[in-house]
Structure formats: structure tokens, C-alpha cells
Length: 263
Image (cartoon, rainbow, N blue to C red; front, side, top):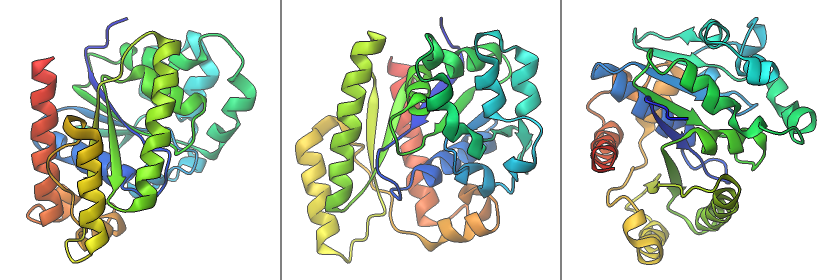
């Protein structure tokens, strides 16, 4: 099954490393440049959904309904779950707390790791990009997010413990590659870099030394505009287009798009 929409999954098995910020900022930049974008929230905590003011627990349909429909899901089912944003070409496929029950309900059923891939295939003509925000736990949701994607984007905070989380994430991807009989293209993105902190520079050096060309050569800096944009329920690229954080993500986006062209 070939998905014509470009799918990027933002994942790391450590929380607080900038996954949602990365997904939202890249999506905002893409939408502002004229692309049709869907943000997929696969985290039961629904941080991405709440970012845009979507009260997912009050919705009649969400990503959970798509999983419960399983292989019988239709294009209309998927489109009915989408929520608009302030940007005309950016939509949210929201999460709910009910997603936390999927491992118990569906984890042993055959083919449940490909539901999201199937759903995105159904709406491939409506969108140019899909960006999937993952929970920090390896389960049916992360498996679906990995199985659906063209590239895994792994935000890694430039501090020691975050590097340990990266090791777990890469190990999980190795396991998944054997199951899916495919190789994941991935890019490690250093985030929350504070040049005033020596440990941040040491962590960045360790990251580039260990993972070499898998690490994007740029840095996402600490930037209070990210928090302010979240409070305003607006992508950082809309809220503060000239901030240093947005500038860094714009460079990352350009890099990622060049990688897609080279494939």
C-alpha cells in the first residue's frame, strides 16, 4: 500500500523533549506555505488536541472511533473525525483518553498495527502532509504511527537522560523493523538547547559523535515563544513568526523536505 501523502511521525520514548512542539511548528510552517496538512494525535493525553483548543472528550468522533472501526473504516469515517484550526489548510485528527484502552482491546488482533496507515491512505488526495504526534510508550498506538510513516522525527532534549530515552526509541524501532520487514528512515533533532549550559553543549557533542549523519546539524533552542504560542492556541509560526525557535524549525523543515526529494 503506497501512501501519496508524506507522513512524518514524531516520536521518542521519553516525555518532555519537544514532540508536540515539533509536530505543531512543522505543521504550521507547512500550512502557511500552502500545503494541506493533517496533525494526528495518537497520545491518549491529547496534548496536541488541547493545544488547539479541541476538547476531545466532548467530541462525537475521534481517532479512537477509527481504531474501533478497524479494517472496515471508510474515508467518510476519517473525514468526520477531523477538527479545523485557525489555519484553513490545517486539520487535527484528535485523541481521547479512550485510546489508552486500545492495547487491551486490540493488541492481540491481527492487522491492528496498520489501521492508521489505512486511514491515511483513504484521505491521501485531501492532504499533502500528515504529521503524527506519538505517546512516549511502545504499544499499538506507536506501532501504528511507525508503520504509517515515511520518516521518523526523533526530538531529543540536549541533556543526558534524554540521550538514554533515544537509545530506547532506537531499540524499539529495530524491533519494529523486523516485524514490519522494512527499514525506518529517521532524523534525530536536538531540542531545548541552551547555549548558557555546559551540559547542553556536551550532550549535543555526544549526540553528534554517536549518531553522526542521523542527527540534523541544526539546533532547536530554548524559546519562551513556544510556551506563549501554546497558551494562545496558535502554531508558533503564526504567533511569533520571527522568533529564533521558529527560524530554527524553518531550517529543519527545509532539510526534511530535501530528504524527501532525494528518496
